[in-house]
Length: 318
Image (cartoon, rainbow, N blue to C red):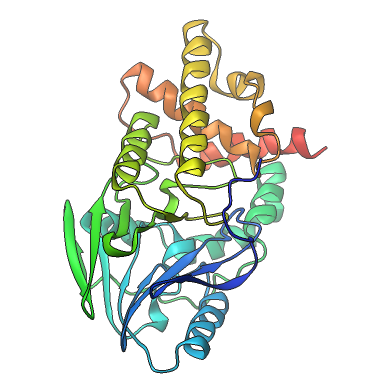
C-alpha cells in the first residue's frame, strides 16, 4: 500500500518554499528522516541521524545544495538516538522538549555500543539486535545536552519564517514534538508517524497518538515528513489512523478474552498492511494497549519488548 506522495529515494528532497527533507530508505529500524527549514541565510535542522558518518553525509548534502545557508538551530523531535545521535556535529542551539532532554540523559549511544558487543551471547534477541542495529556505528559518539528546552509549545523564527514547535508526548516517547511551518503548509512529525512501516510505541498510548494525528490534521498540511518512510499527505495520515484504531479494537477483544500479550501479537491479523516493514513491532502496540486497559502507567522494560519482538521476528523470518 503506497502512502508516499514523492519517490522514496535516499538523500536530499526539495519540498519547495525553502523546505527540505533528507530521506533514508527503507525507513526501517534507525533509517530515519530529517528536515531543513530555510529562509535566506538561516536554517533550522529537524533531527540528526543515528550515527556520526550518516549525519556528516547528510550535512554535506545540505551544504552542497545550500552553500550560502547556515544551520542556526537544531530541533530534536524526540530522544531516540536515530533522531539525535549526530547532534555533536552542529554548533548551534539544540532545542528539545524538557521531557525529551530528560530521556536523552538515559538513552545513551554507549549503551547501544555495549549491547552490540554482547549480541552473540543473547541468542535470538542478539540476532534481532544485530538485524536492527548492526549497520550503525555507536562508538565515539559524544552527544551533548540540549541547550534550549521547553514545555508545551514554542515559536522559533528562521529568517522571517515562523516555525511552531508543539509537544505532543507522551506518545511515541515521553517528549515528542511536532514541527509545523504554517505558512508553508508543512509538518515534520518525528516518530509520531511511520509511513509504510509498522509504528512503535515506547511510552504513550494509541489514544495519545490519535490525538497527535488529530492535531496534524487540524493544521491541514499539504506536505507531511514522517520520522520514517516516504513523504506523505493527509491521505497517508488517515491510513495510519485506521491502522491504530483497528489494532486497538483488536487488542481490546483479545485482552477481554484473557489472551497474553505475546499470543495476541501473533494472533492479530495485519493482512491489510502486509507490505509494511517491521511487523514484529506489533508487540509494542499490543503491550501498550494492555497497559492502557489495565490502567498501568509504568512502561514495560525496553529489553523485555525487544526480546518479545525478537521472538516474533524469528518466527516471521523463518
